[in-house]
Image 1 (cartoon, one colour):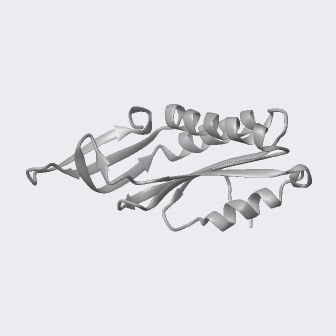
Image 2 (spheres, helix red, strand yellow; image 1 turned 90 degrees about the vertical axis):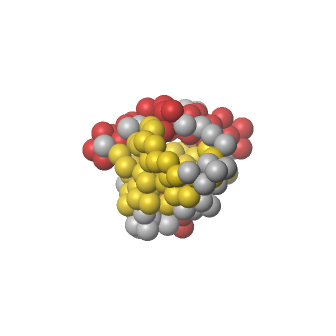
Length: 151
C-alpha cells in the first residue's frame, strides 16, 4: 500500500499503512532505525478543558508543503524516508492527529530529523484547528487557530 504524504480525512489512513510505505521505498534496505511522532489531542489548552478539535486545511497547499518538507529532509545524510500525514476532521481528546515518520541508517540520523520535521510542518503547513473548550465556570468557547500558533 502506498499512501501519499499530506493531509487525509480522519479514518482514511492507519499507522500500519505508513510503516508499510517506508518498507516499500528503494532505500529501505539501508534502514537501521525508524522513529515516529504521533501527535494527539490534549485535554487542556490555555487552562481550559478541551472537549474537541476540528481540523481543516487548504488541502492542495498543505499537501505541497508537506511533500516539500519530506523531500528536503530525505536529502539529509543517513535519512532513507520521511513522511508527514496530518489528519483532518473532528477529534476528541486522546485521538491521533498527525503521524510523522523518519527512517534512516542510524538513530543519530533519525531523531534530529524527526524533530525538524515536526517543527517545520507546524510552522509551514496551512492547517487550522477550532478548539472547543470549557473553562472552570463551565463556559464554552470555540476558537480557530493555525498549527503555527499552537504548541
